Image (cartoon, rainbow, N blue to C red; front, side, top):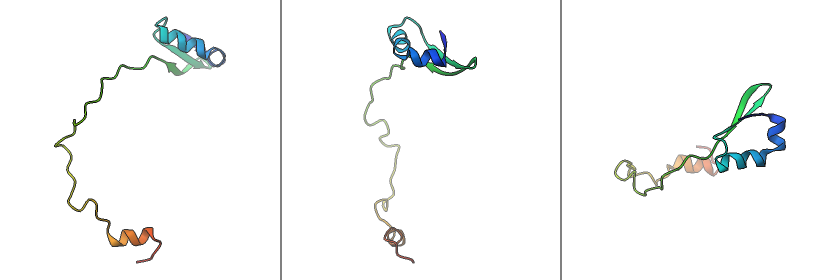
Amino acid sequence: MRVNMHDAKTNLSKLVAAVESGETDEVEIARSGHVVARIVPPRARSPRRPGQWAGRVRMDEDFDRLPEEVAAAFRGERP
């Protein structure tokens, strides 16, 4: 379904309800005859599984150490 911008602003709730209920797959919103936006149902997402990056990320030993020159810069001190 394609609607112009004015109709989309006037009937936004109805257009969203049409997509939500499955009445239409998507609503294209056009300005001057050119599609500028689409209202589509959200994609189904699979539940997150913790630990997917386990063993794939490594932190250096000095990761938590802030170099003194950087700390001085944050304090507004010149080196």
